[in-house]
Length: 339
Image (tube, rainbow, N blue to C red; front, side, top):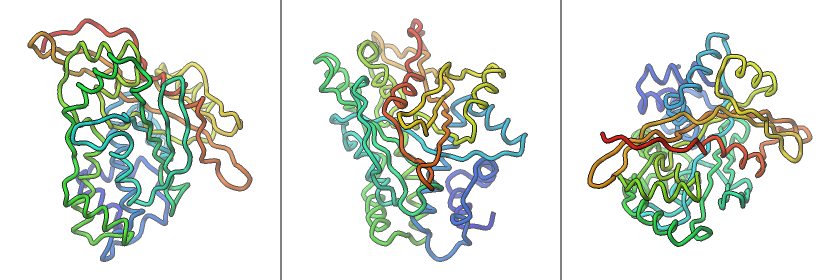
């Protein structure tokens, strides 16, 4: 554990949580270097990914149970990618759409790999892959929802919900991101300051909003309703596995909430399935009171990637993504209960 990466992650999570996360995830040897005078952008990217992976695992009970199973079997997970949702619309003090996230990803060494139009969802997904370690550092799948493709009433609700958004990054954080982009590394004090700030970007940035706005959004887009309650938190994290059919059968036999059907890409090389979203309780405003409602939260995904020539096929598939996104559609909401 005497590495720059562990020191960095422990500074954000605490030593016990960092040790636990290292025990759960495979980490490439190239990312396990002794601490020097500076921290590389790859080490910063890996620390961020590991912190976000832990966050999803803590929020999704089925994921926590799966990870515990793997640890008991002496297996570590291969973190393939994390996904999050944004809205291409004015967002208060927060940059609109994917810009709120890509301003962090680019300095870390991620570059746009490919866009994935999701017309059925009125969204666009984009994959961001790390330049230095494309197969070893988890990708980001960042999607944008396009409110202009929905009704005027829907657009008005989006505006009301997002208008209170704050920016989790201070000017000093932006200066450090610029320094990281320029130098591809940071001195330790700067790295220790920037990592928690980056983690804060992957969360909900807007405040309480009316229940009727949530219901209006849900009528037209389960995805926008999800963004309204969960914000820019990881929608899901993904374990890369060698045999997806066997994994799905095992999880189904254990009674886990696994998707009924495996999604297969047009190339046949990328297979995906997932647990259904965990249910979480969120608060809304209703007739002058704060009320609570069970809504879909995040979930956990599994992916099997074949070879494209002599390299791992790191691409995604729009049809697969559309099917996976249904994991947060949820059932009809229950009646709200006053808090």
